[in-house]
Amino acid sequence: MTDSYIFKGLRKRLVEILKSKGISDEKVLNAILKIPRHIFMGKGFEKHAYKDSAFPIASNQTISQPYTVAFQTSLLDLKKTDKVLEVGTGSGYQAAVLSEIGVKLFTIERQRELYLSSKIILKNLGYSPYSYYGDGYKGLPTYAPFDKILITAGAKKIPEKLLEQLKIGGVMVAPIGERSSQDMLRITKIDDLKFKKENFGKFVFVPMLKGKN
Ligand code: SAH
Image 1 (cartoon, rainbow, N blue to C red):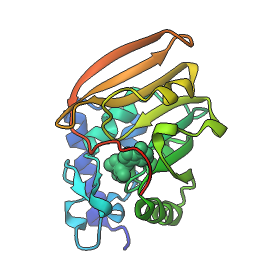
Image 2 (image 1 turned 45 degrees about the horizontal axis):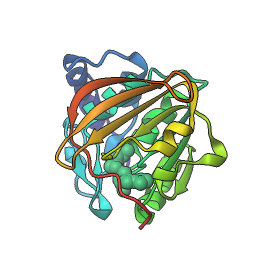
Image 3 (image 1 turned 90 degrees about the vertical axis):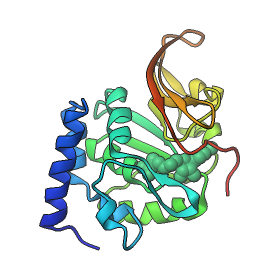
């Protein structure tokens, strides 16, 4: 599957839609303009790639809505020197956005099939984040602490171990709440015991599950 002028045109339109919905972070908009999202979708579904909506992928999971990817990424307020942990690699699209911005990315996925397929797609596009197959609730203690942590699945409670793996001054963006809908939280680690919590409203994600598959 290759890129084309048609897809490029559709991406330009998608970026305009995201701007009209309030996304203004140029780093994020440039990444979305550049990355061929259709390559992260199953064969035959390319035409859905540049609509601003989530879409089913393998293992009963979803590729997040472009607006959600852009919104979560903007909330992280990234610098190129940031060491970032993404929980829920899924299709790999969000990982591509983070890689394109230029951060040092670690990404973890509990579905083996997705861990494997996302790794190949990312590599073919020239991105090489550190990909792991495992349970994101445990994080990656060997590589901690992280400047930023991004959770792309809905958890009932803020995962404690991930807070521990955040640097002082670091930021975690995570959808937290019930299965039906979650609050988009941005948590800033003030010190080991003190956290600032901001709420950016309701979103719906597939659930963050324990263990691996
Ligand atoms: N960032 C992805 C979003 C995929 S949906 C994208 O851009 O496409 C969320 C993903 O989180 C799913 O693939 C799901 O399998 C994964 N997930 C859920 N619980 C997890 C956990 N405990 N550890 C790692 N990944 C998890």
